[in-house]
Length: 133
Image (cartoon, rainbow, N blue to C red; front, side):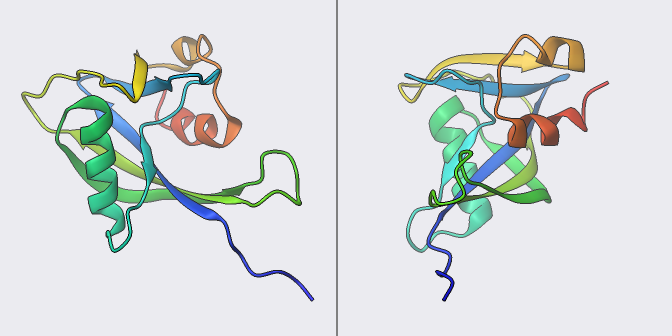
């Protein structure tokens, strides 16, 4: 008998900021990632993503449409999967990004050539690339 899904749901933002998209690096992380995180109990998806962006980057944002949903197993089929939900999002006008204790660095990319400088997990990189020249 197959096991039921017991994974985690992670919300990520393809976050537009001025003329670029935002990447973040977490403490101890070796990859750049899209901003976002997991839901709190009882929280709606869009509200959770707005909260995560505010916590990580100190800005208010507007959440748009869902871009993609995929499962990530970390290369191991037996590993508990994470379900990733990617949203298009925009930093609201007149906001300036400031990183907090969760994030150690931030980068801004506006084309695929710039993106190549930043090692990313393929599931996140492939979603972002669709918005870059």
